[in-house]
Image 1 (cartoon, rainbow, N blue to C red):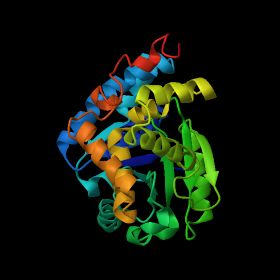
Image 2 (cartoon, rainbow, N blue to C red):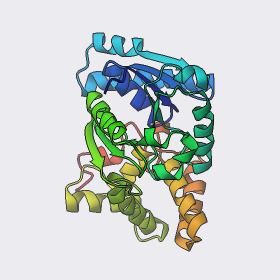
Image 3 (tube, rainbow, N blue to C red):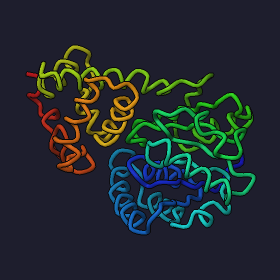
Image 4 (tube, one colour):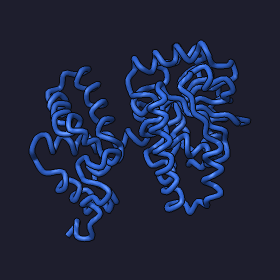
Length: 298
């Protein structure tokens, strides 16, 4: 693996974290987003993230300064990939948006560039052909708060070159991740294959008026010893992501519960900009959510 220049496409919830983590570990990183306004927002988020690295990882000011020197920004797609060894795509979790992005990317990226999608719910084979280089395309999936929950699930598709797969596993390790190779395509990888059913079950209990979010979280935390309940996890993941996943399911299956869940999340959270940790409120209020109270489980 001789990657040096990494491009991150999309500076949203996970994109900006991947960019900062990669720059922190000494790679040259170009952050691409469709507007300069989005890039300015990313710079603000990087400032906040640098404090988290100092607090959680004991990062020195020298390391933080070096990280910022490794970060570059552009809203020009061709410019963003002109030297890229690897491009990690973190655009919205929508098949149409991703396919459209890859068609555009394929026209401007150098032949050497490997493409990796951070998609959490879509399989790489669904848009491998759109990349124009199926053998140099695979999935590289990160969990939220990647500097702490440092997992990287690497999942190829039937046409992925084994050497490319091996190189991306090595890259994941080089940026401080626990590399988790998957041997075949699996919707949701390992993490979300386990996590999504939990979050869906919790949301169903709420929408069906069985119990309140705090009661459900208390049950899970006390009974299993987990540090967070499902609704606290949803706040971290972002309620927009949960909404999008449920909407795709509702449109596909016409399941009445999924339809009701989409309506519930839209009216109570999306429309009110209560999107979780990122906006300061979701199922809990931040920075001091109730589940962190010492007497929460009493």
